[in-house]
Amino acid sequence: MKSITINGSLRESVGKKATKALRNAGQVPCVLYGGDKPVHFTAEELAFSKLVYTPNAHTVVITLASGESFNAIMQDIQFHPVTDNILHVDFYQLFDDKEISMDIPVTFIGNSRGVKNGGVLRKNKRSLRVKALPANLPDFIEADITPLKIGGKLYITTLENEAYKFMHPDNTVVCQVRRSRAAIIEDDEDEDEATPEAATEA
Image: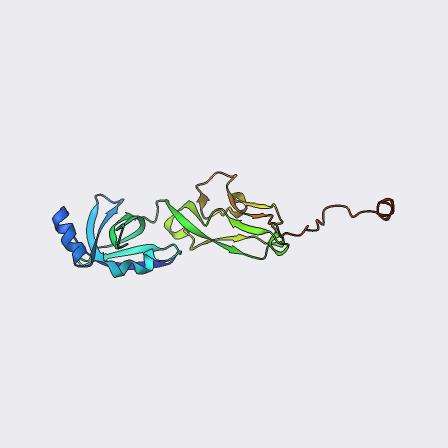
């Protein structure tokens, strides 16, 4: 998985007054959890643009002015309800030998037979939560819709991978092709064709 580096500085004070002053200066208060103790730090708001304003999943390398460096994932983010400025970010520290859960975006590929025949592709899950060692976290999960006919569903079990496990029930529908009013009746190769005799009797 691709990684984004965020440069920051340890916070000397975590009070409301100090936090407000940091935000006024274009800094975002952050906390890193998962280690021996929480690490409070700040970083420029612009540093989060490639992490927040993208549909892709990334890990993060937090590099502090003190010389410390941590591998992490973003766990939670808070925005201002009016300005949409970033108010606070929580991170969770990664360890090479410890599994982590993370939401991974789904990339849909292929040309569905059902869609070609007028059906509508409904994407039930645009991201899926997986659990894996940091080294095995995928950038995205590929879902091939090619086999789907009208009425067909793609279940999460079709996407199973040895490198990670899904944190969803086996009957989770990732996507499906639904019939639209304009859909034509699709030929089903599995059905027997009408016999000449049947056609004559009709």
